[in-house]
Length: 206
Image 1: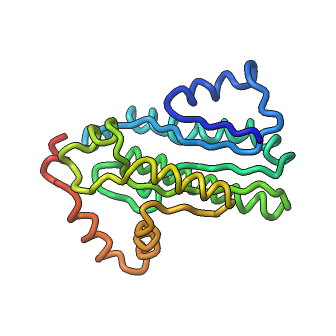
Image 2: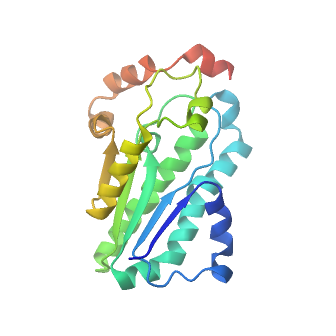
């Protein structure tokens, strides 16, 4: 079994050098889990910050997928895309990051439909994760959110299980699935819930 896990900003450079330096033949799993972060707050929503995050958090995913798809098609493999709750439910003071994650949901949701109608047996697992207990993530939202970070190893296990079982979606923590379902049905309670977890004053000043 051949698994390629791409994480960190190294994946961005890997996307551009793949043609010359890597042969994806025989690939069974491609796990895309790399992000370019931006601090929460109003200053982070500039055009420059948005362009950078779209390049790292969306366009590099598309480029790597296009390179790997022929090999995954041959092996009837799996594509595991690690995304965020902010790619399903918009929240305050996260505009560029949320935009990139929403783009992932749209692109890979459409790709899943295309593969299905073409009878291509490649599974796409979208992983919707919340804040994890990583130092970089904690620093980016320090003083802005009251959300308790989830244990990173448990989130990783959820991603592995989802990819191994070829699940269409993974939600960790599980309550995020309910929040996504409520997004259109009950918009006012959802907005209230999100507001309770934000320190609005600190975020606006950032």
